[in-house]
Image (cartoon, rainbow, N blue to C red; front, side, top):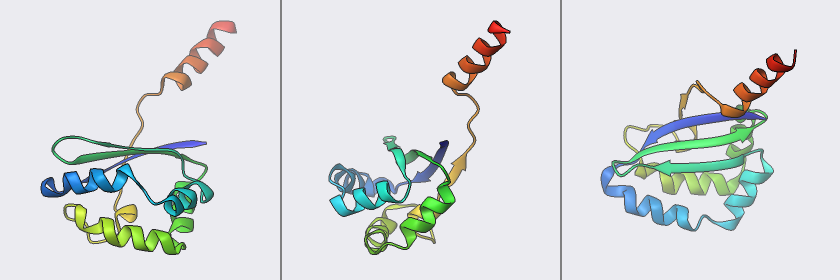
Length: 117
């Protein structure tokens, strides 16, 4: 399973509406995410609107394509699209990927293997 992190920017005057929408995501949207390969998916929102997303997937691009093929995703993205700064594509296509530079478990595994050699 691969780990992915991304960022987007929520408009300052849309932060509360964005929070409200994500406090009660439609059940069919939740099921579609799970069925299309989105695992351990979380969103973190800073007070100024910086949004950080984290998701695990075997292949995020394939998971995004699978979600794009669902009717519920089209409805959700249409509603969410106005919440973001400078985004001319659906939000789930406008991710700015962040490079992972540290993971505790990965480095512990390497360290422990080296110690046992």
